[in-house]
Amino acid sequence: MHDARAYNPCMLHSLTAALNHAVMERATLWLNHVLSGEPVAAQRLVSHAGRRIRVRFDGWPSLLPALPPAVFLITPAGLLEWCGDEAQAPAGDADLNVAVDVSNPALAFAQALSGERPKVEVSGDAAFASDLNWLVDNLRWDYEDDLARVIGPAPARELARLASGAAAGLRALVRAVGPRGSGAGGPGHP
Image (cartoon, helix red, strand yellow):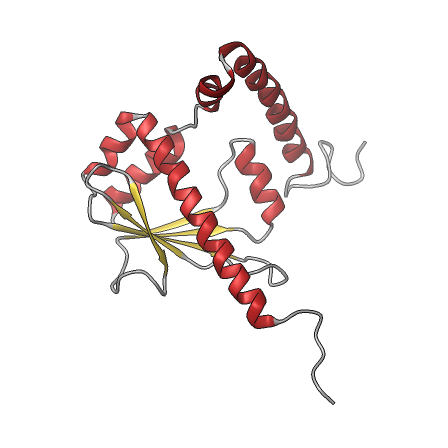
């Protein structure tokens, strides 16, 4: 009797690898767009040019395709260059290791959208970690400005207002069903 499966594991692995590659390239472009929009942010990274950051995603559910660790090189312009996953990255240790807890991807995504920081562990060079922490705390994407370039300032302002309202609702939802309990009053309380 032969092994009958609903999918071809090799084909799924190839598809996942191609998708991961495409997503990481676009994410790197977006991160660099946000960094270049704030000259102070890119300037903080200039002093770390040539150094590497390894980002690892801990606790990823086994039912989903695995997210490989990613390695980024800081360029002389203070931007990021994606070096690929660990298998493709240059040999040697990263100067900074970042482990992001993604054991609940939906909650992590909702927290990110609502402006909350996921659980992150950082190890490595203290000055580099301090500058990266400053970026995470202070750097924001000005999506209204980007939208205004495409659709004009008035519609962009209206979409940003709607998005702000949705984000506020999402923050309230995350607080209500967050890890502390099932609501504002907790279990057994109305």
